[in-house]
Image (cartoon, rainbow, N blue to C red; front, top):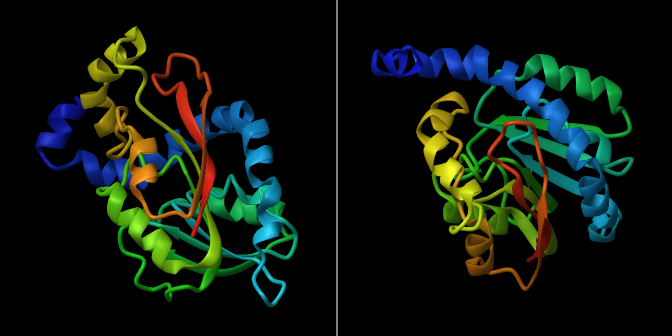
Length: 228
């Protein structure tokens, strides 16, 4: 049915507006529990990247419903961006839970095109479970480096391709055509660590981890940060 609806041009608008925000909210709860300790460790040094003024200006790409808000330090000034503007319910819920933050701007924008954000204007950029679905990883990383001030940091946690010789990679290949439709363009087989290594970060820390979700082909993850 999904393939038929996609062929008729009916699936994408329904998916973006109703299905994807709903299913991502449900899966996100499980993923957040599984990845919580990794995120706590990842974001532990965020205060180290405060700007000269003593404030931390943070831009999140693909904010969705705001599940990362809980990990940001008190007083952090947050700019939220997402290409899909249909996460209002979950976003409002998480904003109420996390009133220790200052929410500055909400932008409907793709990761590849952050023209509304001035160059060198933020201290940190955060991107979790987003690089799998952007149209161009390299263009997104170029925008990340543009908006970061010198000495700022890019934080990431992303699912990636499994080892090519593994059964897990085989099932990623089998599931990918349907998965891409159901999860709004999400790609299961991107080797994102290679894109990050090719980007012009002066310092890059990447750790390969496993985040196992029941019946989901997205166990292999990478987590870390790069400094401009």
